[in-house]
Image (tube, rainbow, N blue to C red; front, side, top):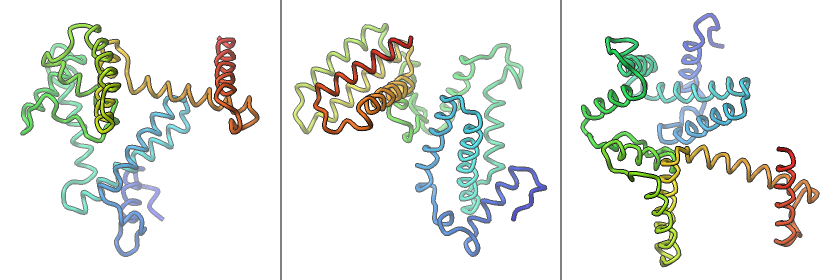
Length: 256
């Protein structure tokens, strides 16, 4: 057993070091790499978001622990490779927070989101890739990454002047999907989705959050349909299923 008298983070790091021990550790943990663990990190981040959305603080505590474990595991693997360790990770983010809040930790007269973005832009300019799009992670969900790319482009003036431009672009992309050859449809649908994200951004709507809400609404209604049908929709034709769908929507309206 690890020493419970030390700080919780030191104990967690000791647990991970033991799990990664090539002689006495866990076979699964020892086999992991940065590439294999990345999908789990993304999954854990979404489970944190889910607990937040449900307002379940007890579950949030557990999910934050699972997410922290991913950070500790990545840091342990990096330490084994001689790259960096957990302390350097913590130091780097603390330094970054102080650097990006000069109105709190420095002598800047004003702060807020504008100053945060100014500091971030200065940091990007100091790096080898000085593109306005630099640093938008490839691993982000596609909707979220599309929004971030569009926002970055907008900061240098590459954007529609009003909401009507992206709205008209959707009509254009819809027509191109309809006219596309089968081998081109995936690309055209991608352009359509990108245009929808752009319109949502101009409306002030978070497309990732909006789609998450729509997914939840569909699941809730579909499960209610199944309940009304006695547990399954098997054997019902499309008209009967549509009637159930409308009945569920009617029930929801009656509850408002």
